Structure formats: C-alpha cells, structure tokens
Image (tube, rainbow, N blue to C red):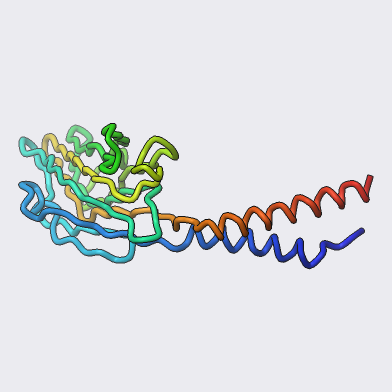
Length: 221
C-alpha cells in the first residue's frame, strides 16, 4: 500500500485548517434603541462575544394579563466577516397549579436584509416546552433559529453584513397559571470573508488531494 506524499498531507492539513478557521472566528456588533416602547420588559442587555443576552425582571403573564412585547436589534458583521445565521435561546419558569390551568408561549423571530433593495425577510416561530407538568416554579426552555439564504441577500458583493432582527414575544396564562422569562439570548453566526489568496490556496490544496487520490486508485487497479 502506498503512503500519501508530503504534498498530499500538507494539502489535507491546509484544507482542514481553512475550514476550522472559517467556523470558529466570529465577530459582530449589536446596536439597539433603548427607547423602544417594550424595551424595558426585556431588561438590561449584555454583550459577550457574538451573544446578546437580556435578563428580564418583569416579563410575566397571568390570567387576563398576557405579555407580548416586541423589540428590534441591528446586527452588523465587523470588517472581514459576514452573517450566516442566528439562534434565539429563551429560558424561564411557570406555575401550573392544576391541569385545568394553562400557560403557553409563542411569537416570531425575524431577520430583515437591510443592505439589499428587495426587502428580504426570513422568520421562524418561537416555540418551547409543552407545559403539561403541574406544580410551582417549574423551568422551561424555548427559542428559534434563522439561516440567512446563500444567495439573493446582501449588497452588491452578495455578502450579508448587516440585518435587523425582530423578537416578537408572546406569553399567555389562563386560570391560576403564571409564566415568565428569565433570560433571552441572541447568538449571531458570522463567518470570515475568504480572501482571494485563501481561495487560491484552498483550491490548490484540494486539487493536490484529488490528484493523489486518482494516482492511488490507478495504482490499486
């Protein structure tokens, strides 16, 4: 059995390095207007890396008093990156004294392309736990995810570097039930923009791998 040449091994290593690098380095900037009517219900926001987290203190629904606040957030990729998706993660608690009572959550998570001119929009329903267990101060999790389309979005270069996110939340409670949110996080997925030299190196590496695979196949045959 023949062993791969150093060139083939180097090419494999190069391709793997490029793929890992593209998946691991993410940099974005979050901006928002704190004077939005519903902003106070989301609580104080904090940013850590590519995550924006809210800590609500009064985001709660009881019988006859649903909660349905909505806010918008602009996400911009820093120089050298483009946006490829978003994850909304929510956690909270609820009280359901009896099976006759009821609590639920809903809403929509949306991303609007603000670079292009066609008003591109993607949305996902906010879903969560089934809320069938009765008791007090029970925990729940929920959320939604968005993937930016690979084409048709962004500016002339086809890369999406800025979008407006909308979080339209809904909490409902009936009877003696009660539901609230403890944390709301938005995680942005950004990918480095490959430079022309990077494209060329990756193509050369993949070409060498393909060449060695063909040579090995012919030798075995």
